[in-house]
Amino acid sequence: MAQTAVVIIPTYNERENIERTTLAVLDVFRDISGWKLSILVVDDTSPDKTYEVVRKLHEKYSNVHLLLNKKKSGLGGAYLAGMAHAFGKMGADVVFEFDADLSHDPKKIPLFLKSIEAGSEMVLGSRYIPGGSMPENWGLHRKFISVAANLLISLVFANFKIRDWTSGYRAITKNVYEAVHPLLHSGLFSGYTFQIGSLYYALRKNFVIDPNIAYHFIDRTVGESKMGPEYLVKPLMFIFKMRLREIMAMRVFKFLVVGATGAAVQLTTLMLYRFLLPTFESGFFTTFFVASFLSIESAIIVNFILNNGWTFADRKLEQGKKLVKFLQFNLTSVGSILIQLGLAAVGEATIGLRPLFTLPIINFTIESGLVFAVTGILLGMGWNFFAYNKFIWKKK
Ligand SMILES: Nc1nc2c(ncn2[C@@H]2O[C@H](COP(=O)(O)OP(=O)(O)OP(=O)(O)O)[C@@H](O)[C@H]2O)c(=O)[nH]1
Ligand SMILES: [Mg+2]
Image 1 (tube, rainbow, N blue to C red):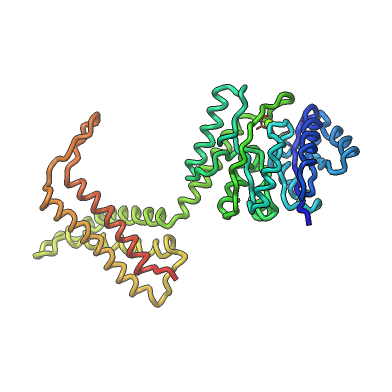
Image 2 (cartoon, rainbow, N blue to C red):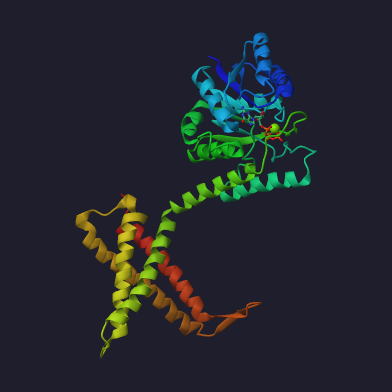
């Protein structure tokens, strides 16, 4: 049975564009076989009465439909309403996102469908790959902003396979829609944030994404652009927020935060114990030694509690095992201290304590001792992370 694809075209004041665009898309439909194809225009009751033009088109072409929203709900709102209608009422297997101003070349539609037939679940048009381009008449600064913004998104998400995150020329299957749309709320996801947001969630849910349909973006010739400064600020806030959330959810990040907290506990309790303990000296056991020991143990206890409750919350220790594991935890901490002391001793014996080099401009001299200390701390941390995973909070 032929699959159904619906090209969704959101419109707001596109009276002068919509007929031309609709006819161009219908023209391409004629050369495609194996698909049941239709167009759904989602108009937000445009003041220029775009919907009247669409109604006329519907009378003439039975596969051109109109969904009329009472009020303006932004690009995201229009697409979400359009997709709900296309997948829910029109039996769509795939929908296209397509602009009314003919910025998107309809002749590429068959390539998107081929990619879907080959197993893609989301297909992206791209301006920044060979065969694609930005409009010639865009000023240098608009081209620069567009390229730089997309490069920045690739950097933040560490994904260079996707070059055009903000492209509004896409095909999306029902699977992707059903998994992603509950995460998108029209108000929060307007304009480019809608495009970046839906792509981001599709990526994180591991859908098969083909980002390689090249197209030449043609600038609108008539009608007004809806772009404003919020088109830049909101998407940037979105990508940083999502990335930060991901980093904060990483075990290594939590481990480092707990480690830093432990170090702070150690320093403050050291001062506290030295202040509280009476001054004494009996052989090995000086006030300083006892205070140091107690402060290290305090840090270890805090580390243990926080790692168990947060860093390794998914591998929380059973009540009965806690004491044994706590003793093992002390041993791993001793291991880390031994690594640090050992490295310092070896370093001092081989390289010796001396200035290594001076940083220009700030005139700061790096001593070998500092290098031994920093390396020792890093190695100690590496050991701790390894030992926690391997011995204390083993994978179940
Ligand atoms: N229904 C609806 N459609 C919208 C809304 N905002 C934009 N659109 C449509 O979404 C598509 C893309 O908007 P454009 O203004 O072309 O945005 P752009 O392509 O980034 O920028 P320009 O081409 O420079 O205008 C067009 O078809 C618009 O008519 C809206 O609030 N509601
Ligand atoms: Mg446009």
